[in-house]
Length: 420
Image (cartoon, rainbow, N blue to C red; front, side, top):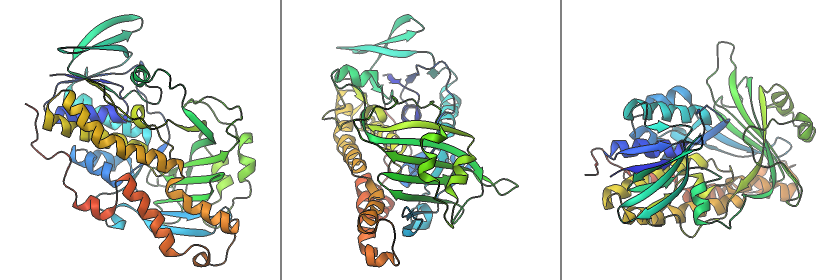
């Protein structure tokens, strides 16, 4: 009764912790030789934070994240469009966290190593193939050219955007889909803005700036501020292939934001003071009609790579892992569990992928741009509060974090659940 996981990202590590909590033997294989805290800021929505808390990691995430207090949308001229509270300020029982992606991954890795042992995650070991038989699944693992076979009951492909396991099921799918947007992402030490724990978004679909703190202020009143500058180009244009570590160049995007010095934030100054800038095309993959094939399934980005809109990528991966654990409890470590997980999670995640393609909750900025080109005296004359709230509420329901529904929902995994 062993679960094999390919990939030690946020989803794979959450799956390992969930298996351990349920008494399921588990082994994680990760292709990179050393796991490092890569990436920049992300957000975790309250329904994912609930799962982190229920895994006993409340103090750990509190130590590395910032409780997001509110999100405010602005036009390209810096005029306020819509503001809403987030997390506990919005009435949720759990916070929303702004957090460094790499720090979250390392937090989960430490928990796995502490609870399951130092050898629970094997690095420099890439899953390169698998075969199902009557007794389980045979998994081929490549350790620097030395390929060996590992046996398990099921295999979970949590191996990311370029999943080899997904490619095995969908060999004709090809590269991720680029719709023309390029993101420049960075972090800057600066004073927090607005409430001090705000997420701010300015612009519209073709040009947008998103920013929020991912650390508490130091003795000088400065925090690590995460920011994303986005520009949209013709989808037929030639652009750099996705690479999370590619250095970005100011000349490629700063001129478009040079005049975005608003009374609530000097965006050009924030960009120029960045520690490091990364460039990445905004990509996703088409929703799938099936994730689970016999004793093998997909999880996280391998299953539902989505645009970074609405703060849902890592959130949905965490929810995948927890629901798959619940299915193991209800069905055992078998094909029935993987099918039940597929039936539950795939339609929900596919809906989020498609909603994000439609600009998700950020569409409120595009509506204002279409109607006013970003300049107005009274937002209520342009887009009523009722309209704005309808747009925000609709997305929350699609993504699974409507406040009333979530607060009253039972735990996915309750204390004491075990797989015997």
